[in-house]
Image (cartoon, rainbow, N blue to C red; front, top):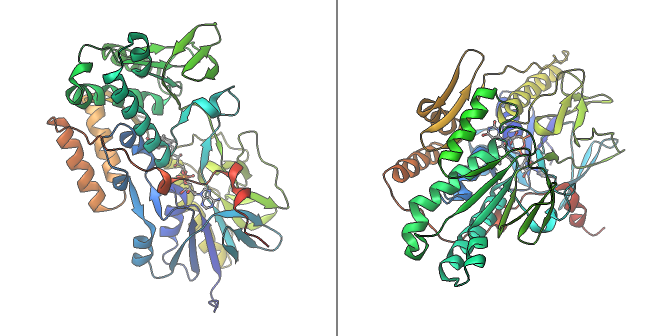
Length: 430
Ligand SMILES: Cc1cc2nc3c(=O)[nH]c(=O)nc-3n(C[C@H](O)[C@H](O)[C@H](O)COP(=O)(O)OP(=O)(O)OC[C@H]3O[C@@H](n4cnc5c(N)ncnc54)[C@H](O)[C@@H]3O)c2cc1C
């Protein structure tokens, strides 16, 4: 039987949705958190799953545990197929769910369709399933290389081309170099004399384009010192089977091609259809509500606030939007007006490799080991669940003292995230 309290449904248990759910703890409402997954995935650490440093279960947090900690919260594992804005009802992969208020926080997904061949031949890195698929691919290639007699084919197996020189590309390429040096060469002695070729391809004239130039320069120099080929102004024109074609006509033979380039918002279909931006994002009012639907909020990567400077798609923006939407909902429940959202930029952090990190705040700019240490502390601090925090600290310490990483192949299926383009196939038979 339906509770007499108003029902707030949150779709997406990423950074924004999780924060909204937590901040609705004091609300006199029935809060339902829906996600296609049974867990929250801590995306900033997925590259460490791809590089075999962390097992996937350490960068996720069970939603059932969250519901256990919050009396007014229920969680439901399901995929939202359509949002019926007129009827205030969600069509799910396994039924329907009416709502009084709705918070949409479905995040973003990799956009590979603009680059010829990328959908077939490149691996994205946007979630846990992608990270596991990439880890399996790399471990398989390097294992095959250890037995491959043909030098040309061996070099192809030992080449990874990473498209996109933003923080994800930088973190991944540094992590792969450590995996190779720390574990792979020990595991396959026949590879000791071989050269791992890691190529980082950036269309613009510098890595980390949104960061200060001095930090971009430091990053490129550090990666080059590690033996990584950093190629700026290298626009990729097409991706074929085991080859990257640059706009200049040059081709790079690589058994593994990773796409860390653009993302688009992962918006579910709506009825009636709403007009999205070219990024796929939903334009929202400064209060984070939809213009014609004050009962609907969009937050996180999905949302673009009208008349405000565009905000980066990062976890702090998503978290602050999630808590702002929760505060506005509580105002609405008390008959008060929602307030505009303002982002407070605390700064950003990225890691290049061991002992090399970057931190940038309004007052502070750090590079090197201090940046690395701060990056570690920030990420372990934000990782949900103390068991995860302890296990991750243990894994990092073990790696620093030379403990070999696990090279076990893993199954990505349980971690697959819904992508709006494929959701239609999930509509239940009527
Ligand atoms: C590889 C990578 C590394 C990153 N590293 C950093 C970093 O170091 N620092 C940083 O600040 N930011 C980082 N980001 C960006 C950051 O992860 C995102 O900005 C943030 O996750 C956005 O949060 P969100 O809540 O909007 O969406 P997400 O965290 O993506 O969550 C969306 C949720 O919605 C669910 N969902 C989607 N569609 C449906 C549906 N139809 N039905 C049901 N559930 C659905 C998904 O399963 C998912 O759980 C990184 C991003 C990537 C891809």
